[in-house]
Amino acid sequence: MIKLSINGKPHEFNLADDVPLLWALRDEAHMTGTKFGCGMALCGACTVHVDGVATRSCVLPISSVKGKKITTIEAAASRPAGRAVQAAWLSKEVVQCGYCQSGQIMSATALLMRNKHPSDAEIDEAMSGNVCRCGTYQRIREAIKEAAASAQLKGA
Image 1 (cartoon, rainbow, N blue to C red):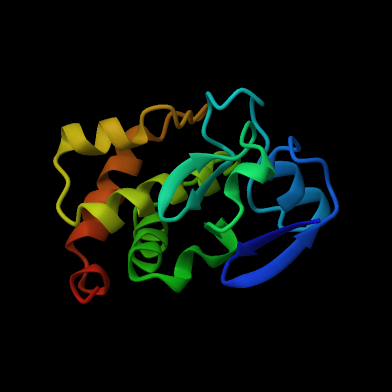
Image 2: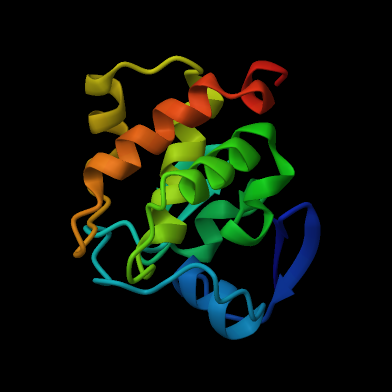
């Protein structure tokens, strides 16, 4: 039995140690906001936070996150940075198809949790590896800048 803290709540999984966190989240905990994209940690659709760090969950064994705090897109708005990012995403109309967006939001939120005033280069670095097939990269950068400037984030 593997016990994990997900979105501030305890969860128990009767799974093999090497099962990827993504499948525990989606199939066992029924948290389907985190998406499966490539299965090789290359596209970013599966991004969650592990102790506040943006992490690809599709290749991360659940045994490696015991005792750590996992946050999924379902709880992103529980933090000021997550609320600011989600509001900016709507304001800048970032989403087209939406498939990559939970991973994009989780990566952007992790960036703003550690750097409230990122430069363009820092945004590009933090968001690299998050693939958007619709090509909304410019709106993503604008939304991150708007979130960084928002009152929600300044109060955090």
